[in-house]
Amino acid sequence: QVQLVESGGGLVRPGGSLRLSCAASGSIYSINAMGWYRQAPGEERELVARIYSDGSTNYADSVKGRSTISRDNAKNTVSLQMDSLRPEDTAVYYCNAQITTTMLNYNVYWGQGTQVTVSS
Image (cartoon, rainbow, N blue to C red; front, side, top):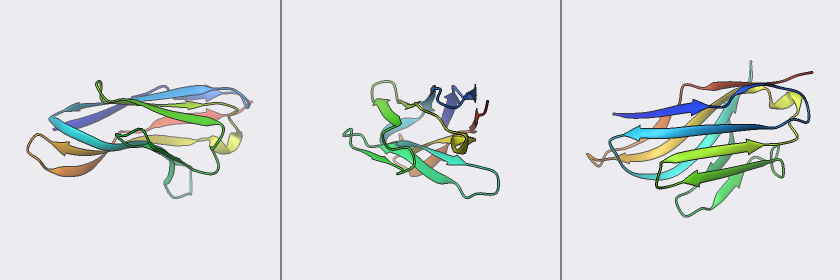
């Protein structure tokens, strides 16, 4: 059994900052990529940022230069620092991880989602 637990969402004013965190726990053998997706009302879920076990990263163009993803491989955690937030960043943010379990089963896991609202 694997769980992803997110924290750090909330309400922030335009131009403000938020830090999202996600911890993976359970029967984990290894984690390849960890990342963050978001879904705004009426929109499809989209990749925000992703970081691989070797530290390489991908960012959506819409957040590039405003966000930084980081990871602690020893603790199985991933964080997303978001700065200069805009109203269009408002969405539910989901943690995502590509995990091989101790039974050597590979799956993609999702967190429950955390709301980020950017509004004055």
